[in-house]
Length: 476
Image (cartoon, rainbow, N blue to C red; front, side):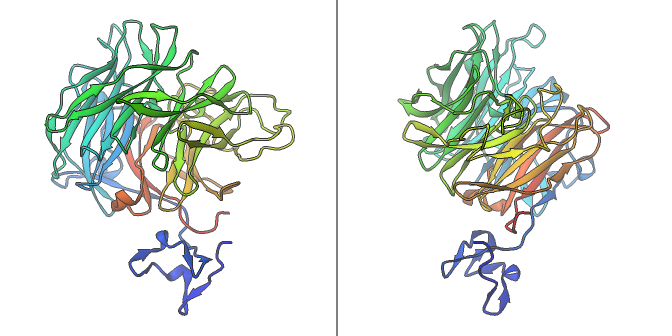
């Protein structure tokens, strides 16, 4: 039980920041009694500046043109953050900026275009491969006569320690069809850290809108060259709302998707570099949709390293007469062993909802308006808590982005009673991506770095970098 220890050597627990070099966020127990600090969940504002120290947009944002498809990665070798985005100032080409963090200031290097031949980019997947010490950026630009030869592509980079790149690899084609494709914008891809292979999810419109997974991986680190794996179909329904997350404990990615009115999941392993899948497991609650995270939201699923579980966010679209309420959001969980996925039981939705938590105040998403900012999940590794962000406003261009902090004890969830503001000014926060804050990225301490851009209103086009600390105080 939290707060069993009140003092240590006469010092109040809330005043202890470090013991033998361990910070309060890393101290779990003292003499087998649970240690809990007193840091409240909070939003942390970051200012942004150019390498010469010049503030970007007064420190409130950067870019003045829309930056769709934002994704973030962290290079632990050079302690640098990478943000990938579609640059509205340059015909929506995929672009990266590399930054260093000092306190709450992010200093960026110059914009680096990922590939100048492809415009109309709507989604990026930015991943740092620690096996080969290379950055891999996936991009999706939809087929259109206005945007040229659309498809899904990937490029690898060797970074230097001065917010730039030493080697810019050749872009490879992952998928392209004149019939087009669809992707889950902020759930496009995920890297499996143990082998440096990136799994990419997409809908193939030339094959009846069936859904596929394929891979890219480094085959020559010095040249930053990539190999594309074979495509493997994981679902045959016309729905490109996906979730994907990685378990370092099982060395597996898990795909979450809807098949008709059934929510399903599959584990992924790699055979000779290609994606191989386990059998599909089904959630025992029907009418669950992943559109809360799409198309303007965040991650539909995250991995909890403390409990070895995947947590996923869905919108219930069933009868309001049941205990699961129509249009409310819910967080459930699943486990994976080797390539077998097991969903936690939800019980009977008419009487109870086991292994879930209900979100009824941050639920406005694409099912209500195409420009709503949507919702998503982040996992705070240092705080071992879930951050759920969503839109609290019934408005497309005046959205209020907020977040809840949620504890999970292995069997039940505890949600904060009131959400905390992320963005309240004019405009709608689109695409909400986070950098994972684990022991390898200690430069950020207990803060999860997030990025998003603003659609509409007086802040239209501005891209923001902020931080969320899930805190370690009692949730109320």
